Amino acid sequence: MTNQQINHQDILTYTENKLKVLFQNDREFNLQFMIMFEFYRKKFNQNIKETYREEFKDRFFKVAKSQFFSGYFIIREYLEYDSSFISNEWLEQKEGLITEQIPELIRQISSGDYEEIIVTAETKQFTGWAIRTFENVLTLIKQASFDIACLGARQALLDERDLRNIESLEETNQGLLAPYNDLSFVSPQTYLSLSVITDEVEKWDLNWWNALNKQNTKNGEINITRIFSGDRVEDSTYLMDVYLSVELNETEYTMLLESILALFMERSKVPRENIQLNFARIEEFYIFRP
Image: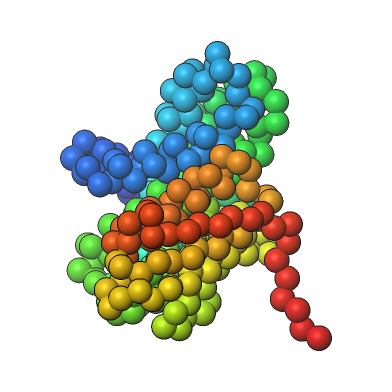
């Protein structure tokens, strides 16, 4: 057996052991994994008949773990052969900024042939069963498989950061929804970025994750206006106007609205009755330059 084969087996064993510990012992990791899994599972609901949903869920959960493993393994393998391909400075970035860059990193590693390199045998078997059983699921499966592999790669990079004893840049500026110096994901495929801030108003853009490889990355806006009624933030009334792209189906935009509202209430400590939420769907977002 060559050294390369030995290293490959070592990396495989390391990945298996590392993920086994996370799944068995890390409550927060499991919570985030299940939130991610449910997000992608629900995207298939309109294509899966009720009688098949439990079977689909069981099969898809195995695929999710398989793809997560694949993404983790790929990063560990590259770090083994060339640890310098990820610098300490790159790992110092905030988690959201790292997450946004990972899909392009995977595309570079795989020289564009990421489907062949990342997709596992288990996923291929699942895909065959799904396209024989349901309609219009192939595109969803391909995207979910790539996304979840990227999230596995992110976990490997965050673990590498810990191994190098690197601390990420401090969160110094805090907004009503998120820190200013990071990209904050409100769903696995959508993140927040600050656009405008004053004493009375915050405007946040919602953007598609780079994994979707869209030309127009903006998929929404959130405008929060504070109506002062006292010195304390929690005593104020807020108007929250949310505009979301029609590309988001009902399940997706409902989950986004719930996440945004919960995030705002948690961070600001404002009760629900002090928030007026208005919602509209937009066909396209444009920047007008006369």
